[in-house]
Length: 599
Image (cartoon, rainbow, N blue to C red; front, side, top):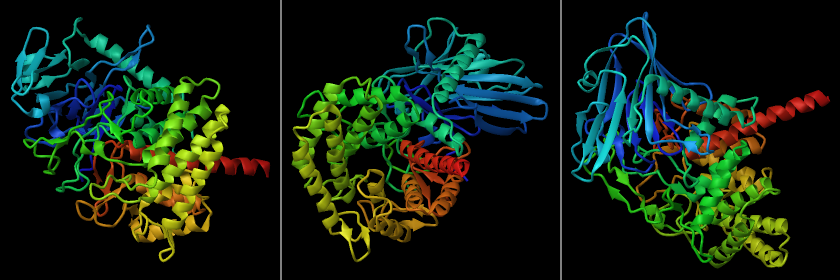
């Protein structure tokens, strides 16, 4: 089964997807949201790729080098054995800055025998919109296009360039390399230099992983997910991407295909909350600065999403010349959802500000700016919380009073009051507390449906929605409150399909949803755990982990019947929720061991 069997490599500037057979099928340079230079993922014929084919009857295995973002593809045919180690360089330089160029290194490690290989090097610049011409030069191979827009790509290699470009059979007798660069190199690369880049990048990732605590259960899954989240962060501004791809469909052949190479305030804030819990404080600091930079004006309204370089206009258009993943069209770049109004983002952002202030209480930078943002958020929520919006799932139809949005408006006030107390700013607390209580009472009155004994998707609705499971996580309601317990039970009965959850079952702008939204199943597992059904939760969790691809990676969605991964990949949402679940199970085991030792 095709299960999005790709590995991701990256360096917090851009990312690349490599298939389980070693074909580089998706890459945008110089940055995450640039036009693609390889896009076979979105069009088998036109998109362009960089394949390494072993000539013979080779067994191919793939894994990550332990605790790193270095992908190792192992080729073996009897005595003929070699490996390709794929990575994008990233390490700390002597000046304290990170070396993270828009480059991909494919280090070919000779192991034994006389392996034969054939290269398919076929870049298609600018989303393959025009013709890309490739020329062999003295020191490198240059590819360029100038029909739509001028762009170039450079390939350096230790192998015979004519043999590489002509897809001739190459015999491997020693280590070699391929270096794909967005910019021409000043100093000529060598195999030794590429080996050094590999070791420096390896040390960077090992050191990064070592900063996090070790967990007794699911530590490998937590680590791989944390590395994946790190690969979706953009160093330059602190932005966090929803995913590394565009237009991978939620259902094959349908039109729910979106560009996820942007920073959603909601997704990013949730990611940063989890990443800082793992001890990675620099990412949290950079993200807070990203938010501060977006809100220079006290009256600045927050969009739900931004470009990774803080762009506010993300015009959506279709690339009609591309066939789409498995024929799923349209292929979109840009995202029209940036214009939507979603009232939940203020609570989510306020929650992150509060969490970071708690962690950095003795060492908080930008305290004054964060207090200004806090007051601004309360003002905006106070003015707008009674208004309908598009909700967490970004319905493109009419606005409604979504329960999740209302709960997060309550969260905004709850966290703002805590921040005010932290800063000793007591003047506004009484007024804010009255507003907090008003919102809470409104939710209990209008979001609870006594006929189905559950909190529902929107005021006056009968529809269930997985997002209301987060009421407990955000502290709106206690896990053992009968209302929450019965909501979890109702959602299990109404939205679960063979252990996988629908986001909701009511018809939206594109019809009825037909795949499971992965994060919702993780939320459900967390809720089962919290209401005391821990064994059942663990059983669901282990089954869900088995649906990952061969490297433990998840996309946005899972097909109910085949269990194949669907949607943009790898998905930050899915991996942050995986970490939250895994930490819960690990903490539970730690608590049990402490109780046993006391007994």
